[in-house]
Length: 451
Image (cartoon, rainbow, N blue to C red):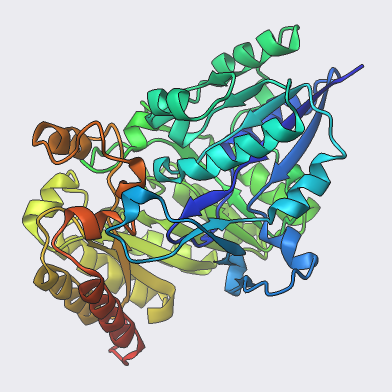
C-alpha cells in the first residue's frame, strides 16, 4: 500500500499580509521528485489558497483578487502577542478558516507530513498549523522545512514541536530525511530538477517560474546567500519547455518570476528566452515582483521585455543615499536607475508598468531621506513602491545589530517584521509612516512626463 504524504503550506499570523503571488515553491519542488514514485500518494493542502475559500463564498469574506491574480487574504483577528505592544495595530491569522481546514483533514490519514515555512516573523502561523495537525494526526511525524526553518533552525526546534527541522534546500538531503520516515530509499530525479509540481495547485492561470537560484550580490540585509550559497542559472531550453507546458497544457495566462537576479548574464540567459517567447508568439504575461537589477538593462533587453509582454516590472533602488547603496553591494546607482527607466520608456513601457522599490525604516534613515527617494522616483516618471524594512536573522545587518546590543536573546522574531521593525527599532512612528505612504500614493497618481 502506498505511503500517504501530506504537503502543507501554513497560515500566516502577522500584523499585515498581502498575496503578492505567494507560492510554496520549495515544497512544490520537493513534490516533483515524489509524485512519480508509485510507493507514494501525495496530498497538498495550502492554508493560504485564496481560490479555495473564495469559491466557498465565506460570509463576510473581504478577500479579493486584483489584476493578474494578486489580492487580499481572508483574515481573522486573534490576540496580539505581548512583544508587539508598541505596535498599535490588530493582529490577524491569514488564510482559510480553521473549520474548513478541519473538514478537509478528515478525508486524509497521512503517514508523514511535510510542512514548509515562510518569513521568520510568521512563525506563529507555523505554530498554529502544527497544533491543528497534531490535534487531527497525533502520531503522524511532521518534518518542518522552508525559509524560517533554514534561517532560524534553533528557534524552530525550541518553539515548534515537530519531529524534525530541516535547514537548507539540498534536495538529496531532503529525500534522505524523508526516506528515514517512510522506510524505503528515495532517489532524486534528474528530470524533476528546476520543475515544481504545479499540477498540485488549485488554480493554474497564474503560476511561478524560477530560472535561477541565489544571487551574486551580497546586500547586508538580504538572506538570499544564506538560503542558496551559489548562484546558478538553469538551461534556457528547460525554462522554455516549462513555459510552453504551462501555456499549452495548463492554459496559464500569467507567469511570475521568482528569481533574485533574473537579469544577470542576460546575453546568455534571459535574452535568448525572451527571443524565443516572442518568436513563438506565446500569449502570456510576465511579472517580476522581486526587484530587478537596473544596471543590467540595456536597449535590447528593454525591447525584448516589452515585446514579450512584461506587465509588472519592479526595479530595486532601496535608497538614493550612498551610505545605504554601499550596504546594497553597490548593485545600483542613481545614474544606472535613471538610464534603465529611460530605456524602458523608449521601449514602450508606461508609468503604471514600472515600479521602483524604495525603502522605509532602514536603520538610521530619516523621514526626509524617504521623501527625497520618493521625489527622485517621481522625477523619473515611475511608480513609487514604498517597501518597509525588516531584519532577517543571520544577515550581516542582523549580526551588526546583535553586536551593538540592539537585539538580544529576548528579542521576538515578531518584532522584526515589515510592519513592526520600523516602529520599534527605527526613527519612524505610525503617523510618519502613514504620512509617507499617503505622499507616495499622491505622487503615483500625479501625471508625469512619459518614461
